[in-house]
Amino acid sequence: MTKILLVEDDKGIIENLTDFLSGEGFSVTNADGQKKALELLSLDSFDLVLLDISLSDGNGFAVCSAVKKEYSLPVIFLTASGDEYSTVTGFELGADDYIAKPFRPRELVSRIKNILRLTQNSDTLVTLGNVEVDTVKGIATKGGKDLYLSALEYRLLLVFLNNRGTVLSRSQLLEAIWDVAGDFVNDNTLTVYIKRLREKIEDNPQEPSIIKTVRGIGYKVEQK
Image 1 (cartoon, rainbow, N blue to C red):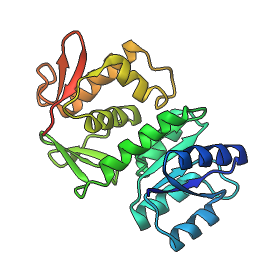
Image 2: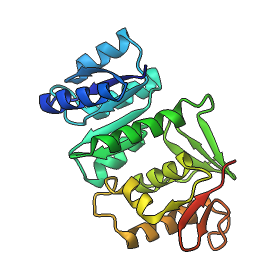
Image 3: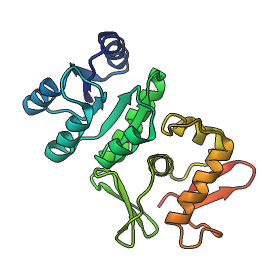
């Protein structure tokens, strides 16, 4: 059974989320602050950490840093902070995903399963052409050089990684990234971010070999 550490100081969210995740087959342990979270991590083993930024003591950023340094566990931030600074800071500390409150529980379960599928792979380095993604550190490189992806660009790349070989419609992509950016993500914004991502990862963005357009349907990254 997948063991999740929920680090959250809102009693209502703790109760509701614990009940829901338990019903989905997860084992959930909760902590309301930084000290208790770090204590539980030292005493037990977990598969994933769900982490709020604002805690009763300390903060989620400090917990994330410790989790990545000491335990190399996947981390998903749960937070009401929708600003770009918080999002980017979380990813810079190695967070694997970010979902803003209020969120739909089933969307969270989908994110959890996607992250676990990606990070539990024995090889934490995922290759797409000459682009390499370190799913533990949360960074993407090309030719050994950091691509410095924004939070939304990295999330978009993860979506493609998690769905290699599958054609994704624009509506599916919007659904996956809607809460990562500080501003509303619409169809035009998606076009801009796909263009930016291609400019960073493709050898020739005008003739992409990684993120391919499936005309009239959406986009696809080949299974390799």
